[in-house]
Every structure is written in C-alpha cells, then in structure tokens.
Length: 274
Image 1: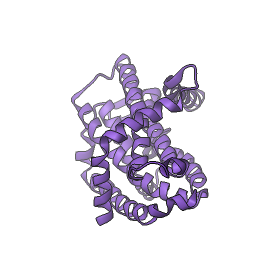
Image 2: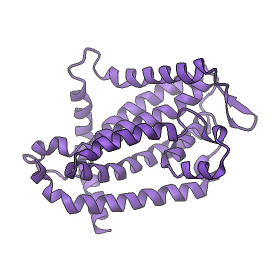
Image 3: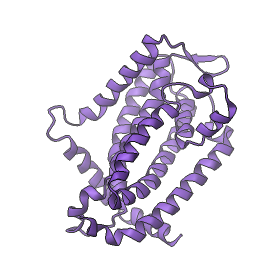
Image 4: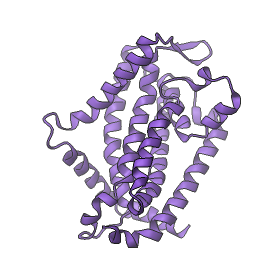
C-alpha cells in the first residue's frame, strides 16, 4: 500500500511534466514523416477499413444486434470497439518498453520513473481523443446521433487509463529486467484482439455460457461494451452491469498494487540494466 501511495503522489506532483513530455513524445515520434502526426490517425483508419473489408464485406456479415430490436451496421459496430482497442494496444506496447528504452536519459535526469509510463500513455490518449472525434462525426452521418449516454465515455476513458497505467507499471518493470517479456506481450495482445469483442460479438458467435463468462474476465470486454453502449445510446453500462463494474475495479486495484510494489522494489536497480 505504501508503494501505491508513493506512485500516486508522484503522478499528482509531476502531472505538468507528464503533460509536457507526452506532447513532446507525440511530436518527436513523427517528426521525420511528411504527414507528421497524421499517421497516428491514418494507420488505425486503414486497419478499420481492412477488417471491415475482410469481416464485413467478404464474409457478408449481417448487422450486429446491440440490444433486442436494435441492429447496427457492422462498420459502425466495428469502429465503436476498434478505436479503444488501438488505444489499449499502442499504450500497452509503448508503455511496456517505456523505461528500458530511456535508461540512458534516466541516468542524466531527475524525475520519478513511474512518470514515464504515464506520459507514454497520455501521448496515445491524445491520438485516441482525435480518433474519437472522427468516429463521432461518422456516426452522426450514419444516423447515430449524440445522446445523453455519451457522458459515460468520460468514465470509460478514465477507467481505460487506470487499467493501462496499472498494466504498464507491471510490464515496464518486467521488460526492463527481462527484455523477452516485451516480445511475449506483443504476441499475447495480438491474440487478445480475437478474444475480445472487437471483430465479432462474442455472445452471438459462441453458445457456450462457460466460455463466454471466461472471455468476459478480460477487462477489455467491459470497456469496449461500455463504449458501444454510449455510441448507440443503449444503456448506462457501468450501472446496469454493476457486478461487472465491481469486478473491473477490483482487478485494476489488484494490478495497480502489484505493479506499484514491483516498480518500487526494482526501480533503484534499473540503471544497472543499462
């Protein structure tokens, strides 16, 4: 618990620095490209079109039922989940290698190492916000107008950042000690794309209640379904599924406590891995 409190204080005390570094991270990453930061949006849009072409057009996937009596086009349903998946995937991958790729810089600067995964996540969060605006505009043209349920997007974005920070604390520490962890994580996340309700509705594809329950243990399921509930105005997902909400935050707290303990225990030795 002491480690967790220390990490939280470091985030609060250095929030201005985290914000500045996240913007610098985003700009420096794309400074050598002609289109610059536009590639941060172009890449996920291309991926959405590819998955829509493969799973929506070639396989002639029918409209997706979000609630009884309400079907939405596959492309709209896909966009609602894919933008969150892109944010989660990029933040987790970048966050897991955020410390060991900056060890040389850390040896010359004086700021808490726990702030490094934070500013990496925030740099991806700016991209996510821009992608969110694009999707919202597209949905308006498709007839899914802004509604009161959009307010829960604020909650689900905050929940996503909390999950990402907890996971990044763990993975950035383990990746610094054992570099193979990053490669394993990359392969695992690619598998998670097909085990999450990003490309298909799991409940409609599978009829085994036990398997569906196991897949719902994936916290991404909770976040993605929450996003879609907001986009299509179906329900206050975090309230009507309050048991799932309690499970999600219980998992996040456990991951954060473990990640904080792991980070504080090993960070004084990080420079030794340079």
